[in-house]
Each structure stands twice: as C-alpha cells, then as structure tokens.
Length: 273
Ligand SMILES: CCCCCCCCCCCCC[C@H](O)CC(=O)SCCNC(=O)CCNC(=O)[C@H](O)C(C)(C)COP(=O)(O)OP(=O)(O)OC[C@H]1O[C@@H](n2cnc3c(N)ncnc32)[C@H](O)[C@@H]1OP(=O)(O)O
Image (tube, rainbow, N blue to C red; front, side):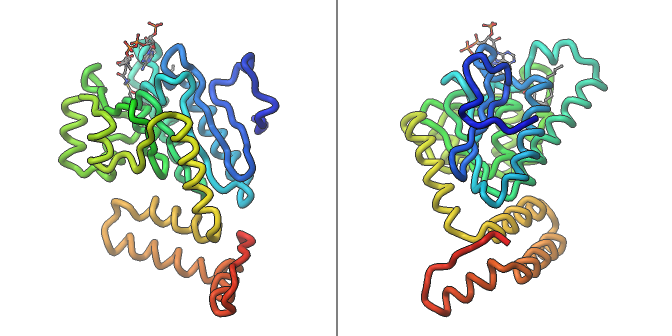
C-alpha cells in the first residue's frame, strides 16, 4: 500500500483506513462511519500495513494521531455482522490479525495517540489501548461489552486494560460490560487528557507530539521499546530489558549530542541516529 498524503485521499476514496501526513505528524483515520467505524477484517489488515509502512517514515515522522471518522465513534468494536458468520478457527485467525495490528502500533518508535471522539467499545477500546496515549472528548464513552454478546475481549483487552486501570477495575468493566463516560475514564487513568470537542482534541494531541518531538527521536523510540516490552514482565526480566535499552542509547549520536549540548550550554540538535 502506497502512503497517500492528504492530496490523494478524497470522499470517493474507498480505503477504510486513510493516512494523511502533516509535517512530522501522520493522521490515520478509520473511515466506516455507517458502522460506527467497526473493525472489519480489511480494516485490521489495512491498519497493520499502515503502521508497518509508517515505520519507514521515521525519524522524519514524530507522532501519529489515530482517529475515527463520522463524529459519533472512534471505533464501536469488531464488526458484529462479520463476527456472526465466523467459525471458531476463523475468529481466532482474525483475532490474531487484530493482535498483529496492535503489535505494529506498539512497534512504531514514535508516540501514537488514540484521539477518541464518541464510542470506543470492544475492539475499539482495545485498539486505543495499544496506542501510547488515549485522549478523548467529553462526549466519549468506553467499554468492553463483549460479555453481552457471549464473547470475551479478543484484541488484547484482558492484557492491556488491567495495565491501564488496574486488575480490579478491569475485571469489573469486563465482567459487567458496562460503558463508562469521560469522567470515570479520566479518574480510572484510561484517558490521559480530556477536551471539550474534536478540534480541541486534535490540537491538544498535536501539541503533545510537538512537545515530545524536541527530544531525541532515538531516545523516545528506545523508551517506547522498553516500556512496551517490559510492562507486565517480572522485575528481573523488566530490568534487563531496561538495561539493554540504556546501553543502546549510549551507542547513539543523539546521546553524544545531548550530553555535549548540555555541557556547552546550548540547545541540542538531534539527528535521530
Ligand atoms: C470476516 C470479518 C471479521 C471482522 C471481525 C474482526 C474480529 C477480530 C477482531 C479482533 C477481535 C476483536 C475482539 C473484540 O474484543 C470483540 C468486539 O469488539 S465485539 C463488539 C463490541 N462492540 C459492541 O458491542 C458495540 C455494539 N454497538 C452498540 O452497542 C451501539 O451501536 C452503540 C455503539 C451503543 C450506538 O448505539 P446507537 O447510537 O443506537 O447506534 P446504532 O446501534 O443504531 O448503530 C449505528 C449503526 O452502526 C452499526 N454498528 C454499531 N456498532 C457496530 C459493530 N460493532 N459492528 C457492526 N455494526 C455496528 C449499527 O448496526 C447501525 O447500523 P445500521 O443498523 O444503521 O445499518
């Protein structure tokens, strides 16, 4: 898939996942508003491909905003119509496809911000949890309602939701399947920043990426690699992962530049190598 820029995507574009580049920021839009951006097999495949290809755009790429089209939902879950036709083995295959898309997001060495405006449910919340940060508008709601369909989360919710909100709250949300609003989502630590509306949300997400982009791209990428790999691991395993990342930082030109700039009392100029 070639990486289209804003000029090559338009209303008649049949992609379910669109990518627009704006300087160092990529905006990835899931565009199935008639189904509240529900995740189909092709959306999952496109998401994985998009994020794998964005890896080739670094270090010029400094951050990604993941958004849902239509103004009512980020993503309202896996496509229930499609799920109804699945055999168990097919469901497993598609869940693995979803996990691959999440892995591609976590492997991208730049911050990915899920910009939620509306519903983030089931696979939609799980997709947001694979991102580095969840920012949301006051109109947003979140939940893992799979048990209401006789299912369980199949896209990492039982792995990442406890890490975000703690095991007890994750259990209550997954067992009850209830939706929570923005107040509870912020209190629970699920949402990092809230905004009055979509414009403020996207502006705030860009501001956060700009604030990170002044730092060494290699250091930010190494920090993400360690945080993704180490979280949830036993302490001895996690500390070894951090030590390996710390050692890798000493092999970078950015580290030399950062230390030299401090000692020479000047601003660093990081090349991302
Ligand atoms: C072969 C392809 C397979 C693709 C599937 C991929 C599976 C693998 C992916 C990884 C595994 C994911 C595992 C995940 O954990 C499982 C799930 O996500 S299960 C789904 C969880 N989500 C939900 O249960 C939410 C369902 N939606 C609702 O509850 C409501 O729609 C709402 C969000 C509360 C909004 O309600 P309303 O405002 O009343 O709006 P409508 O209900 O009328 O919705 C408008 C329109 O959108 C359609 N729609 C909404 N959600 C989905 C959905 N999840 N899948 C498909 N379609 C959806 C809804 O049917 C309406 O359409 P219309 O009737 O107008 O045609």
